[in-house]
Amino acid sequence: DTGVSQDPRHKITKRGQNVTFRCDPISEHNRLYWYRQTLGQGPEFLTYFQNEAQLEKSRLLSDRFSAERPKGSFSTLEIQRTEQGDSAMYLCASSYTGATNTEAFFGQGTRLTVV
Amino acid sequence: AQSVTQLGSHVSVSEGALVLLRCNYSSSVPPYLFWYVQYPNQGLQLLLKYTSAATLVKGINGFEAEFKKSETSFHLTKPSAHMSDAAEYFCAVSDGGTSYGKLTFGQGTILTVHP
Image 1 (spheres, helix red, strand yellow):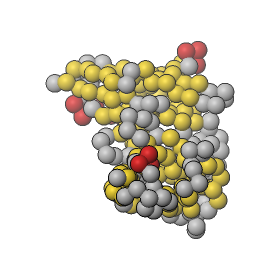
Image 2 (tube, each protein chain N blue to C red):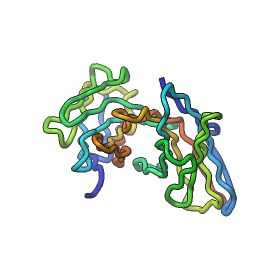
Image 3 (cartoon, each protein chain N blue to C red):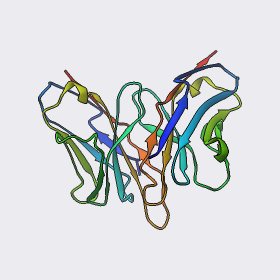
């Protein structure tokens, strides 16, 4: 397994445009998490899925943000009508929760710049 | 609610010197604690984790951390710094159980290693 994969690695967009990021988790992991990291800060939790079900959303996740994991495998995070404040690194992580639990494994992130 | 405080946003050491990165946590339940390392424009890599077993935890690259419940601390140490240790380090806490992979991070500590 190659680990958690995120695409694209970098995205520059104009304010007001929509963007979509993709995350492919480690294949046997049933949980998938999205975090946002701004410059000089630690990652902040946005939302997570168990299989295809979105179980929790942070209040940081405004109405312009939507996440899906349609078949319990890859996930997408869409930001509509981007704002300059959305500029950040978006990190995806996956883990397995069941009889035993694994820690979260992170992807390399997607860096979004809104100009 | 859980929280993590990392004392010192920047730590500078000489190559070969002791590395000490401080982390204090707040949790209403027995915590699960983690240290992650992040290199520039990369995701997070797990260094070590505390999951209520031994209080002294050994991780990768010669790092270790000690869980001290009375001090609510989980400081990261390495006896002898190497140039390749220069990176940003994040302490994180989880509730464990079904929330094992959902993390609350500290602000991060940037470690600089001088020759």
